[in-house]
Amino acid sequence: MERILEQAPRFFSGQNLTLLLEAAGLTLAMTLAGCLIGFGFAFVLVYLRQTPGLWGLPLRWICILYVEVFRRIPFIVVIYLVLFFIQTVTPDASLFTIAVIAICLYAVAYTADIIRGGIESVPVTQIEAAQAMNLSRLQTNLRIVLPQAWPVIVPPSIAFAVSFIKDTALVSQVGVFELTFRGKELNNQGYSGILVFGTIALCYFLLSFPLSMLGQHLEKRLGTPRGERRSRKIRHT
Amino acid sequence: MAHLAVSDVRAKYGTLEVLKGVTFSIGKGEIATLVGPSGSGKSTVLRALMGLTPVTGGTVEIAGERMNYSSAREVRAARDRMAIVFQQYNLFQNMTVMQNLTLAPLKIKKWDKQQVNSEARRLLGLVGLSDKADAYSDQLSGGQQQRVALARALALKPQILLLDEVTSALDPELVNEVLDAIRKLADEGMTMVIVSHEMAFVREIADKVVFMDAGQIVEAGTPKEILDTPKTERARDFFSKILRH
Ligand SMILES: Nc1ncnc2c1ncn2[C@@H]1O[C@H](COP(=O)(O)OP(=O)(O)OP(=O)(O)O)[C@@H](O)[C@H]1O
Ligand SMILES: [Mg+2]
Image (cartoon, rainbow over all chains, first blue to last red; front, side, top):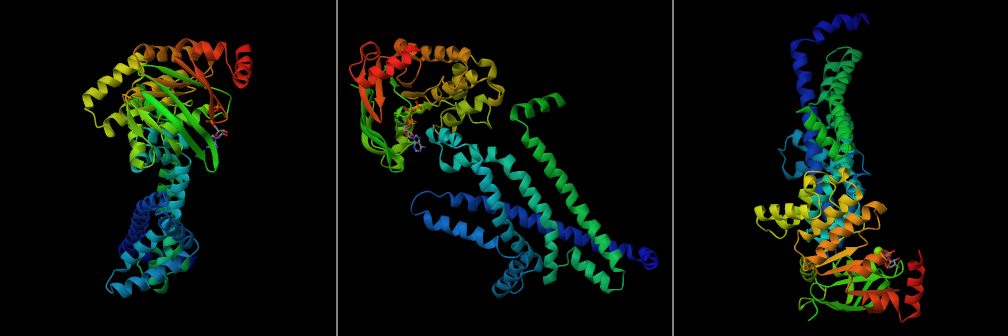
């Protein structure tokens, strides 16, 4: 305890704080970039998985296989796979890029299932009404299904991203200068482990808490019927 | 010449043949009603016409044009000429009344925006809902939703309108407002195929009554012929049961 108190002023120096702030930024950037890009690709995957007809069969199988495989591999293994694969293809790819790709690959598999669940929650009668008007499959998805699936998709997707903020700690294993990596570094410089990792823990909390709150807010908002949502907006203005 | 001629149409759900060769026809501006016991295939006839249940045989002619539903293009052609209103309205939940009415005319038919909008307003007036243009369906009663669904189908300017038990999900006091809207369409000369259990309404509005059982047409004729003096045992049985209460 005495050691912590004695080290604290030196630990919370400008230099260390900048280091931690940068690392926190990197952690957040990696997670958001990876999850957002992955989320986008997940939509494509789900769409391809719905391809009708016989010639869509191989496509459907590939999509199912992708999700099933990546959901069964530990994230750390995905990281190493991406690291070694990318390094053989383009040796000078940055570690940040590699981390984002790994997160992205992983996020696609997880959010694809969330998206599929959301889409399946929309009554098939809505789709039939659209088909009867000659809306194409893409139009039906974009204009009818997705807007209605949104409330089911958004909350668990944000929850996934929030939980992934902490899982990105694993990319410190390949030397990305994110929070956990910097923590280990500072610890090695002789700072008390409790002091260092206590601060790191607080950083993770501060990163993910606002995102959780946003998720809860959206969940509540998307959960209210459209009519009420609109009239409430009118009352505010 | 028949405006709609359905001949020997067959349809399957999986391996179960639900329509076993259905044949009937109506002239322009006429109204046919499909009646028959539950599960006899009435809804499936309308769904098959819209290409929502795969047609496995037979042909359909609309205003002299032949469609046989064998390709996606042909199904689109059929859907382009007809519109359907479902028992459960099926309004798009994420859109306002006005958006429901204008979506397909703008995005699919690619008609002029101003004309589409003014036509949509005229139709809302026709069904008595001019003040609900900006409402979402969860702000409307069942009868109001069903009238919007009618207006939405009309906005497509279909050559033939298909109505599948459009009043049976409604509370009794809301039935008449929807029937009134259909009466107006009949007066305007809309060609319609109507599935209904409201026998008084069928008698009043139909030019032709088609009695179905087990995926086949058992009898067809004028309302008087079919409702009052059915020739077959099955039809007599059915009408004696439902006309008694
Ligand atoms: N999605 C489906 N999958 C399999 N079978 C179905 C499906 N929909 C309907 N059927 C079957 O097709 C037959 C005809 O059904 P349909 O809905 O056309 O009858 P209906 O005359 O409209 O009856 P109702 O008066 O109850 O609406 C029934 O035997 C029904 O069980
Ligand atoms: Mg039915």
